[in-house]
Length: 247
Ligand code: NAD
Image (cartoon, rainbow, N blue to C red; front, side):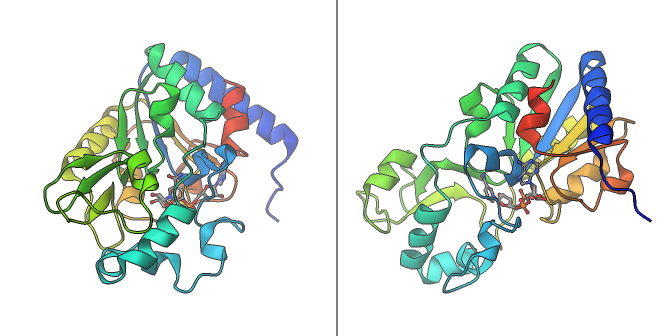
């Protein structure tokens, strides 16, 4: 029978993680939506996540490139309502990661998140695989618009030139920035410790990044089981903000 994840196991795992972090000066962190749930931003796949709520179309459809092109009004209604959390603040996970970088222990944060909270916490080397809600560009003249400017416009935001403004966010059906992907692969390949947290590891190609890690300190911190738990050297099952508070 499978052993239940106990309080004792959790405490031991956090202790082991703390020791590895103390010993390491080449940590790379790779995270997803679960890193920001303790900041009040819902993830996609948890029971209270976006995918388990009812909308006129499935969220994967709305935030796809073809839907955005076909129906920008509905796209922007959903996007502004459900994917923008302008008042969210970094939690302990973001803050401790920024501190570890400052201390020379952590080389980079690689994130699937689009919320900008790592930078807000002070992290410098952040690989945003899926872009950021904070950058927006006119699709005709490429003028830059901030998140505040987008939110100040009702409905679909249009540039002064008449072009539609698109968030610099990777939608379904769109490719990832190859430069960012290559840099992320390189950070992971050379890391002595890879901490993966708050991600269901089912969104490709991002989820495939774990396969580039060559070391022997692969740590998973997640509330629920992930497909790579059995490859990990250490699994901490819990809330990532609380775990990082203990480091
Ligand atoms: P996901 O929703 O598929 O998975 C989130 C995972 O985090 C789940 O396994 C869940 O159990 C775990 N989790 C939730 N809260 C946690 C916590 N406090 N501590 C530890 N674990 C926690 O998210 P994903 O894997 O990142 O992939 C979904 C896609 O959603 C990404 O591509 C991302 O771009 C996008 N997204 C981003 C944001 C954001 O920017 N904050 C929010 C929602 C979705």
